Every structure is written in structure tokens, then in C-alpha cells.
Image 1 (cartoon, rainbow, N blue to C red):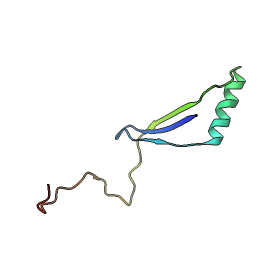
Image 2 (cartoon, rainbow, N blue to C red):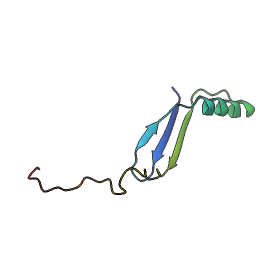
Image 3 (tube, one colour):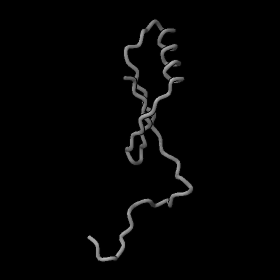
Image 4 (cartoon, one colour):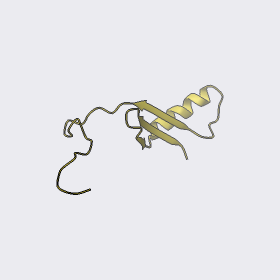
Length: 68
């Protein structure tokens, strides 16, 4: 199974995704260089842009409702 991942450098969160077009492109590049791919792994690293609908500080808030 081929692997495609987006890795958030801030949180370490990894999102696995499929992209048939990327796979076709990688196989085409490999063939151009005389390779027949046996497996494909793509990791993209970056930082996720803040979602404008979420507060910038998404950490849990400490509320004083007597819960632990």
C-alpha cells in the first residue's frame, strides 16, 4: 500500500491521504529514470493555517465547575 502523509510540524499530527494523480506522477518520474517502483511513500511537512472559525488558542480551558 502506498503512503501519502501530511505532517503538522507544530502538533505532530499526521493526516493520511490518497492522491491518484500524485501516484501517477511519481511513477512517471521513476520510469523516466529507469526505475519500476515497488512502493511509494510521500511525506509533506508544514504548518496548518489557523482555521478562522476556531479560536487561535484551542487548548482546553480550565473552568471552575468543581470537576476534576
